[in-house]
Image (cartoon, one colour):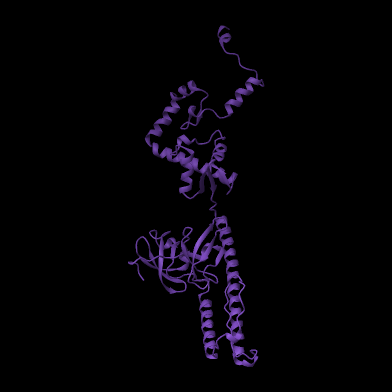
Length: 380
């Protein structure tokens, strides 16, 4: 009876104090009193000291001491897998603050603690996710933000379909634009040739005026007098028509080719070799409209590559580029602005060209590439 009187009385079941004790035991405790090896959370410092001297803890420490690097690596892999699983399931591919995801992750009482992994801080872990290519990371005034990259087969297939659809739409627009320009040129040439064959229909002037087709802003200029224009023989007009017809045939044969000499390109095909992947080079000659000889900038090696293995290079604002597609193909321009949201740029065509000074807005990235600047030792 004397021994029972010395025992501390227990709180009645269902009382406020008993509920508070149970709730405290279920929730998160201080991290310094948690044993990761035994996955045991102690209530206070005294309980943690008692646990450290227990037989189960000493046995776990002996196992950990045999190969500590392996244990830390296993904890790191488990932490990474759990964190990415929460990020992908809870937030998907949305951009979210890293600290918000971490706070939600540690709300689980049985989560793997970061002090058991190879990362000392959340910042180090976020940088690891960015370097490994699992997430897009960026730092702002509010801290680090992360965005999960979905690399599942379904997502890759969906992105490939969207890219193919966008490319088809762009190709259709480009093909329609080329067809319209071709029709305008042919119609103009037909009018000129018909006029030369019937000089009596020229309003009794026997002169021929040529039409220069360019997509320039219309300016208010005086209309020239037909009587003052020089006489063009029919043979000269016929030769011009042949030249334009040959140029149209060359453009049709090129199709979707964008390769040109003296431009800087980047190798995007991994099968070319790891030493060339994501490296830049200069096109020094064309084997065909779709195959070019590229001299790598860092090693000087010359490779014969298909245009599907290459992509264009966009330099900084103020640099010179060569237009690869559209009605201004082959002309040089300077970059005025880069729009990262719409993946487009604003250009101004350089002087000493047919369309000098013309400004082009919303030009897509793959329609231009950096113009190569050869030194005296570079190949011609």
